[in-house]
Length: 404
Ligand code: LLP
Image (tube, rainbow, N blue to C red):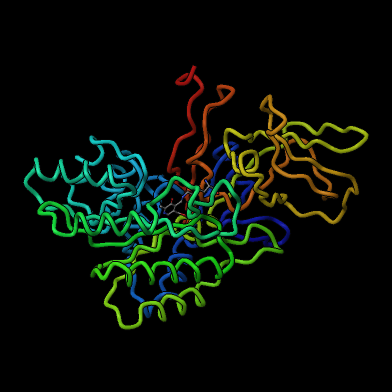
């Protein structure tokens, strides 16, 4: 995805052409970029040979999941809906892990019937429930046990999951009690220690600490796990000052952690695979000039992309056609929704833009469309996949008549 002669292209198609053909707001993904991200991920961890389970919560479009399946990846799911769509996309159940603090009996029952690789349990009561179902079905269920390592992921507080005050996993003390009480169960096989400390992590330090805590926990329990599921969280570059997580360093950290063990590693990346492979195209409806700033009012809003409003996330916004003249005035890019928090970005200056121009909101492949809603009774946007010069609609725009 880049400019060619001042016009922005996704593979071989200009975004202006995509916007014209499919309307706006529209999510656009590049197949090539998704495949590149997967290959880079695989290459960085080649010596560990992990099972890579794509985190379906980051993007659950079935066509995206089919691409992921074709690359040999599994899935990390957190609900019956996600499990169903992963299976429907053809992902092998033996490559699916199921996480989450509140799996219902119906969801557990379904997952057990589908014989997925692991149900990653997050509490003692959940384990009791899984054992009851397994006993009723006279079957043996493979589970993982999620440890809360009490480590700071050094990320946005709303997406940090590994501190003791967070609802996820169990403490080392309870972990030990569960292993002791369930290691000889006839119906449960605890195969995996799982963790996930947070999302959009760009430093290797939190992972270093996490690995240390896991190592201690395994030592303290004197129990043979087959897998260690290290979760996801690998961060990407949302702006030019930020850096991606260094996967090669993370790989070395893990290699030294694995020494003298036969543990097989599972990863659950979402954002790293799909985050920068998706953009959101939006048209400028109006430009409203005030003394302090120019409001650039877009046809995309917080119902289409909630990350800026919810997490204060900053997504780059660039024009579909580059120009050389700039206006030195504050520009605030906002949506039409009736809330002050419906804003995307504030910049000090911007190139000359006009009503009707198409803008690109970057890096929205993960946690973009999945978090969209019908707030203000706005239809959800369409999704388009670009493959070279081919443009394939992978989700139709909601029709206004269907939601009214
Ligand atoms: N595994 C578990 C158990 C998770 O809870 C998550 C994300 C992942 C894997 C994938 O994490 P990733 O590799 O994508 O960082 N909506 C927020 C992010 C929430 C992440 C929730 N859990 C955002 O837009 O930043």
